[in-house]
Image (cartoon, rainbow, N blue to C red; front, top):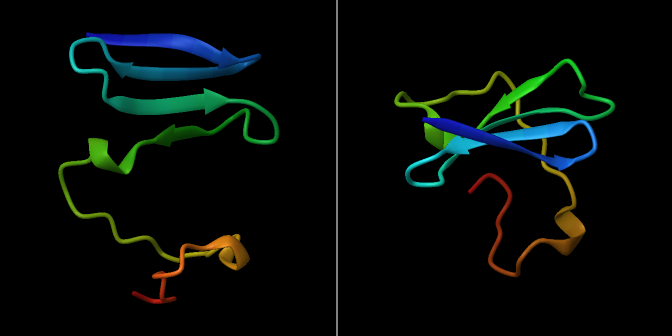
Length: 67
């Protein structure tokens, strides 16, 4: 029941054709060989080996690093 579309040249997004939930995206430089899976699609907790925060200068006022 997955559907897909090319959201920009060379980038494909897949989603549930019933509810519309995002499942994955793939393609696009410099990550052409990656498949990115939406964390909400997993049914077990995800514990990344490392975390990187980006664009903190434009974070919302209530954000606290490490929260």
